[in-house]
Image 1 (spheres, rainbow, N blue to C red):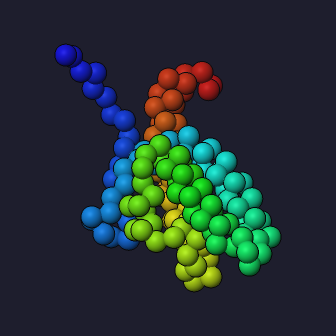
Image 2: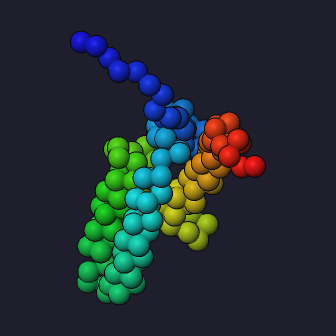
Length: 136
């Protein structure tokens, strides 16, 4: 069988420096940002359900929230990453007054912004080679 080979842009990231917990994704993939945006609105709905729950259904609401967040995080990265990222903790564990899953998202966004900005600059340089004669 023949192979088609090309650079896909994937990078590996260890979670909190633990090299046994590694996820692999393309930090320049705009699809991650769009999936993350969609997921954040789903998280807002989950938070609302948790706040509205009562003593009788609170545990069930927590279980549903965890399951949904695990699924959504896997969806964001198009891979089964939730155990690696959360290390078998609840994604709604509070850390420093913030949900763990939000800490993850807030750690990933700056990485993507940096990578996308670097790629944009490289793209502008490549485009300038072809457009400089027309800019006059």
